[in-house]
Length: 529
Ligand code: ATP
Ligand code: MG
Ligand code: MG
Image 1: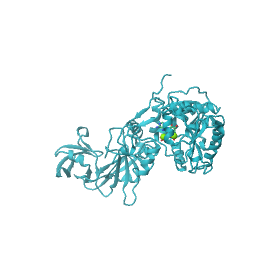
Image 2: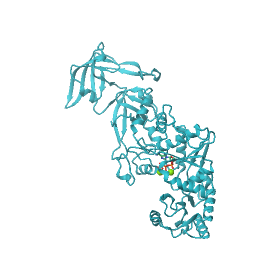
Image 3: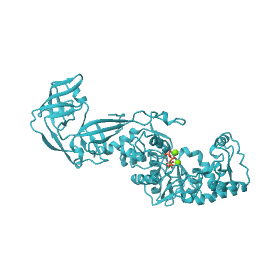
Image 4: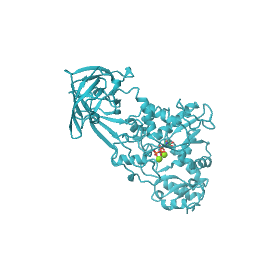
């Protein structure tokens, strides 16, 4: 079908692989354990799984751990957990480091066949030469000298450490990735699996095609910013006489006002601008979950994006709007009133406090019930109180109509209002339906948190310095009081505070510290409390 890139109701990537045989497809998701899983990775993981399942083949989860300076066991563990969370499972978990011996032998083979040379040109000069299509002074060293030098690299000698191994492909190919790319580098940092066994490590460009081929991968899914590198990938396979792999490009996911690079996210963590990799401002799987995104909405959204080849700059709003559809039918309803300027009303005609059992969700009885207090003193949000006019009839939600009688102000601030119940009144005839909270000893203090984007630029471009883009203030906190039912909520529970929005309980109350609720964006224009 000609439905490439279109979204579908079934949540499927409506697209097929090329040269795919039922039962024989092997895909792989190859995260580098250098950070936590982000939403872009989630797309790649879900796509690989989707194709493996569609063709009744196999998915390999491979930790691409060829750079010990960046990688840690902590990251590997978190990636495993997050993959399980989004339902990406595989019985085959491998590591690029499992193949270090074989890759080393293949590097020797390249050298022996005159297809690789060891270069001690300094980095800047090398970059310059590659840019200007100038051959390195080492390009035509004899095989024996290259072998000797590679041995020095392997042993991490003083001279060895100044060298790298390069594939001898081209000096001046229009495709810059083919200008004798670096395929092995020295690194003395111990590796989280192989320890200090190695002092040389293959680069991604060398390791990826080799491991794909050795592991039996039939289709290597790569984001299309790697397209220029495809020729290089194929060169490696051919030069080493390995089994061919089909490369299949898909578009990278980008979001407005968002960094999706582990290195840049790590910078925010290191600077202390966020609380950690699970910060609610982070686009990591953990961060967006903490902000109240459901896994169901995440999966639906990613599958809807489909396999489009266009590099997309996505809006967060659509994802949050989808999330709202998931949470709205089940989120229990509670009441909160902002504390700093609350307006206390005297409800005339109420004698003692009364408690009623009300549904937590009017349209979904399965959500259960809550206890609602009715008393002669109720609290309103200041904004609602300021809208009141003496004499008008209003509706108190879940209670009934009332007439506004006496309004007392201190400047613009409403300090108290007298209300006279008119329960026979028709709620269909009132314009204002107000959320209120019985202002008694049962109310609980809560903190409401909301967040802004971490960076000030919608679309980050090459050359932008992250430090110039940092939004100065991104966390907003307000104190409120809420109905006592919220005391029963657990961390991670999602609720709605009536007429305020959806919230996720981030931290239950402890001692004197009030419970912390994070506002869940709902896809409407950015809101800050
Ligand atoms: P990062 O910039 O976060 O380090 P990366 O591409 O270097 O990203 P890897 O761990 O190497 O991170 O990526 C694992 C897989 O996830 C790769 O196949 C990569 O193409 C894919 N991937 C990474 N970022 C995105 C993204 N924004 N959209 C789609 N796929 C992505
Ligand atoms: Mg990478
Ligand atoms: Mg990257």
